[in-house]
Length: 144
Image 1: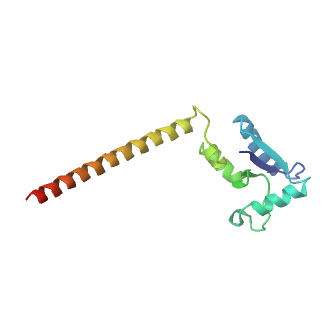
Image 2: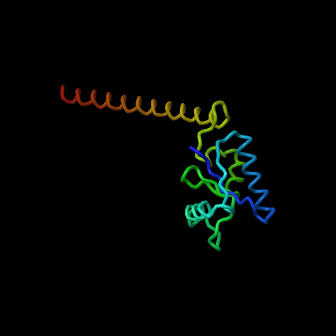
Image 3: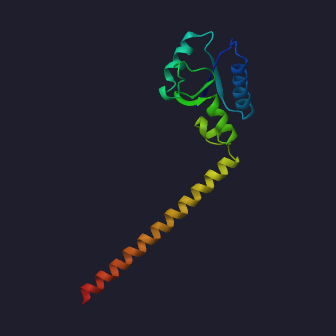
C-alpha cells in the first residue's frame, strides 16, 4: 500500500506550503512509504485528485486544495483531518495502515484482540453450559 500525497510544487500560498511540509515531514518522521504527486505541473494528477475527493469532503467552491491524502485509491483526507489524526495519535488508522510492531497503538490493538477472544471464549462456555442444562432437563422429562 502506497500513500499518495497530492501537493502543489508552485503554490503561491504560504499556508498551503506549510501544510504540505507538515504532512510530508510527519510521514518521513514515521518512515511511512509515500509518493508525492504534483498537481501544479501535472494536469493528470490534478484531475485525478479532484475526481477522487468525495463530494462531501470538497469545499463549497468544489475544488479541493492540496495537500490531499490517499491510500492507493482510497481517500484518507485533507490537511485538517490529517492534523486531527496527528493530534489524536491515530495517523496510522487515518492512513489505513497497521501500526508498526511495538507501537502503543499496536499493543492496544493486540490487547483489544485478546479481550475479544476472552469474551468469545466466555460466551461459548456459557452457551455450552446452557445446552448441557437443556439436555439434562430433556432427559429428566423423558425419564418421567
